Length: 203
Image 1: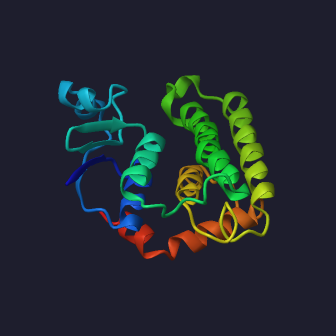
Image 2 (image 1 turned 135 degrees about the vertical axis):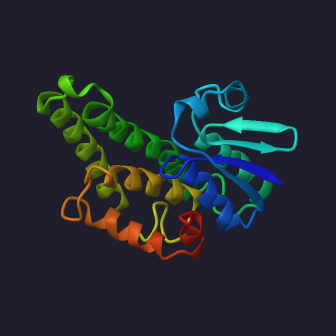
């Protein structure tokens, strides 16, 4: 059985959600967001960045949420949650599988400038430009999504999982708002209705 090393509210949610969608049995190992725990020699052997997610699947140990998602799809997906390779939808899928991480990285800068740097070094002069750049990135995703039901068209794919987590991350800072990105936020509402999403959100 696959072991998933998980911290609530992090990118490991992507992996958990995907495994729920694919109905892959897994053992969830929930950990605190604590560097002393995540940077033990045992954890660094699983993820050398001292973060989650990491999975163990028999002899396979893998880190990085995007890489794990692709591995699970290739190994267990049987063609599910991916468009047909070579199709126009496939190109959109590739674009947003990776573009989702760009969205998340913009939010990560907001996190750093508002919470991670020492309090006496924080300033709106630093955090406001980070928030502006994050809003600009989400606005681009909003425009690209348009009135599609899912990021690749009408069918739910793993790219929706990747993009939705960026929205979850951004929501911690009120980025984006429904007024700014109504299509993205409506898409997130549709994702929340999925039973696998709900199961992945459980403690």
